[in-house]
Image (tube, rainbow, N blue to C red):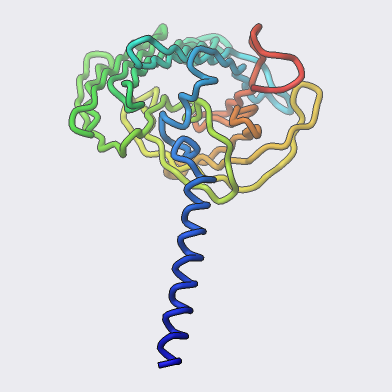
Length: 266
C-alpha cells in the first residue's frame, strides 16, 4: 500500500511539474512571437510604419549602392492590413546586362482581420521584361496566376495558418524577438521566374555587428532555398539591420527613415 502511495505521489509531482513547465512555455512563447506568420509581424507597433534598406552590390573589395527596398505597413479600420514593398535597382554598366539588372519590383499583400493572408500582387518591370503574379487564398490554398512575357502559368501552394508569402529578394520583412535554434519556413515568389518556393530559416547564433557607427547585439539568421544560402543580422527588436540576398551579390543594409530616432534601431 505504501509503495502504491509513493508511486502515486511521484507521478502526481511529475504531472504538476510538467504542467508548470508547459504553462511557463505558453506564457513566454506567445503565438505572436512565433516567426513566419503575419501575426508575428503585424504588431501594434508596426500597424502604420515604414522601413527602408539600401541595396548594395559587391564590386571588388567594396560595396556600391545600386538601389533600395522600402516596405510600408498600413492598418485599416476594417481590421485588414496591407503590406507594400517597392524595390528599385539601377542598372550596372551598359549594354544588355545593364538594362537587365535595372528593375522595379512591387509586392502588395492584403492580410485579413484574423491576420491571415487574403490576396497578393507581385509586379516586375524592366526594360526587357514585364511580369505579373496575382494570388488569392481559398480554403488554405494560395492560388497563383502568373504572366511572364506572353506565357501564363498557374500554381497552388498549401499555406499553414497565418503563413507568410514574400518576394524572393528579401524573405524577411520584419521579425519578432528571436531565440537561437528557432526554425520556420516562408513561401517566397521568385522575382525572376515568379514561381513559389519554400525558404527555410534558422536562427544560428548571436553576434555583434557595426551599424550606424555603433555595435549592436544581433541574431544571425540563415536563409536557405535549395542550394542557395544567405544570412541576415536581426536586432533584439526584430528589425533586419543587414541581409545578404539569395539572388546575386546583393547586400541589404537598413537605412533610417525620418520617423525613426537616431539612437536605437526600430
